[in-house]
Image (tube, rainbow, N blue to C red; front, side, top):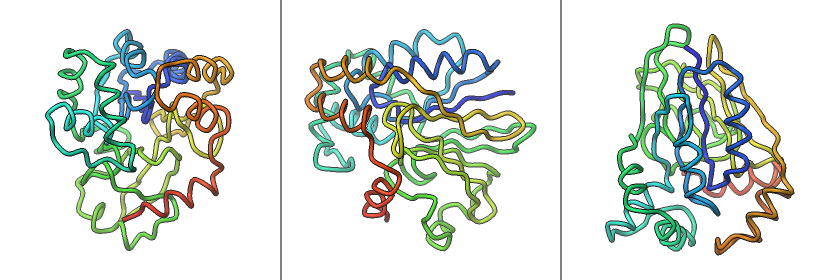
Amino acid sequence: MKIAAIYDIHGNPFALEAVLKAISGQGVDLLFVGGDVVAGPMPKEALSLLSRSEIPIAYIRGNAETDLLRHAKGLEVYGLGPRAKSEAAWTLDQLDAWDVAFIESWAKTIQMKTKSLGEILFCHATPENDTDVFTKFTPVRKLEPIFGSLEASVVICGHTHMQFDRRIAGVRVVNAGSVGMRFGGTGADWLLLDDGVHLMHTPYDLDRAAGAIAASKYPNAKAFAAKNILGPPTEKEALHMLSELER
């Protein structure tokens, strides 16, 4: 079985469209969407693109979807950063009741057995929750309590928008990176899983995306276009920011 894993689309349909086109030429049997689809400028458009996929899709929630669902139920939003509540409120206004019900059906994690890679666990941030932050430099000793007791040989995650491939307590932990809000450079990142795990990168039309997003009704449209499409944080800048959020 050949699997593609895409994470952290963040309402960027231009990046998603390019990645889906790249995936379509790979003979993929199953597409995993790893959460944070809707937090961003064009959430409805991103969901619509995924709905037209001819490849079967399995979905898991990210912290953005958790925030959205909590806000929809009138509960406190626990998301990262001071904008989490307003982001959830704006996103909810862009979606209809069917969209919200569909997102609520997504799993928190999914585990499946494969012939070539063994048991694979798909999660958004860590197997414990969808908010914890760790990077390729986080000490193993801090992560062993999370990954050491898993019945999985491979964990696929996202959340931090930067790809990595490392071993923690005997488990191979691979970050898919971000499709729509990549850190450390422009373009879109994703994973291809077959007999191995391959870190993939797909360029897309940055000027077209930035122009359309800047002109959208998203509250942070111009900043998103400038800082997350055309000029994302460098790897050094992103790692410093993420280190401040680590548990």
